[in-house]
Image (cartoon, rainbow, N blue to C red; front, side, top):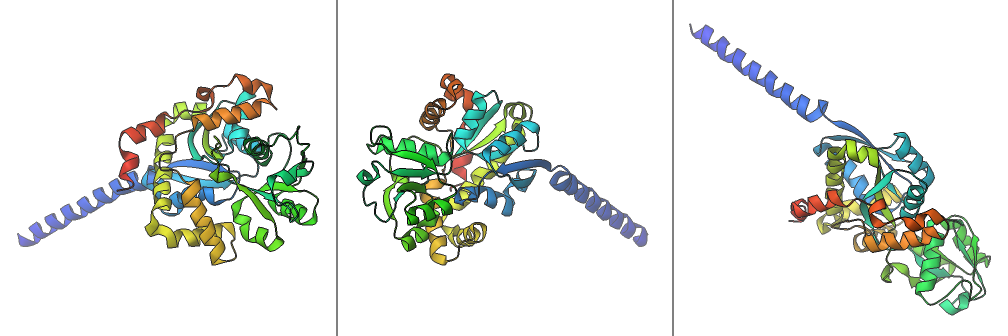
Length: 340
């Protein structure tokens, strides 16, 4: 009789283990939703995305995320529209130009709302006035982010390219533009602060820190296709929850050592001092606690894009951004809960 009772209890325990194990597997693993998230550049502004993937924040939200690096904003747009990407960290000018051309895209979250550049002069260029009559280089012409930053910054600082005979030329990537400054091929350009140690070595002059100037702008956003947002709104919300937790992790001083290692490895930084500089820039300028799409910044970008793509002139904030999910997570107290 005792043996019978023993086996009954053993069988019940085994059944309970199997049922619980099956539930956990179905809920915790089998139900993970695949999501492809792209980014067009590699810089410290990507740190919340890297953290969300590394620390399991996406899995916590039921998502199996694959992070894809796609070179170029145009390629990111094509991948979003073709279904190769579900969401992407992108460049607002490229997003707005694509929307003006008929692409059904929407920004659902801002990443940074500053111009992430120093305005830099060659060794002989000591002041803003020294740029008059000179050649200033950007990565490319048209809608390149650096070109738009130069045009807007010069006007904000009291210079006018036409009046002051400043010629904008295509001068390549940031290392190429640094070489152009050192050789005298160009008198000025914009350079990401991550290159500060190289600028010092070359004897270049920082004429203005554009991040510290009040210029309505967005340097990065999280974008998705309208169709994906409509059909998979819950998935988009889950992804934004994970990214917001990534923001909170980055902004938490207790995570500083981990962030320094992450930035050093991801950005290929050679020294601890470079990693510290990148970290300090990231927490001060590039990560937002409540990253609403920035209305004034997007309106400024629309105005600049319209000078190259006339059809952008008719766009409104509502045509390029949907802040409703961030607003929901803010009003529900979710965002504030990440900082307690």
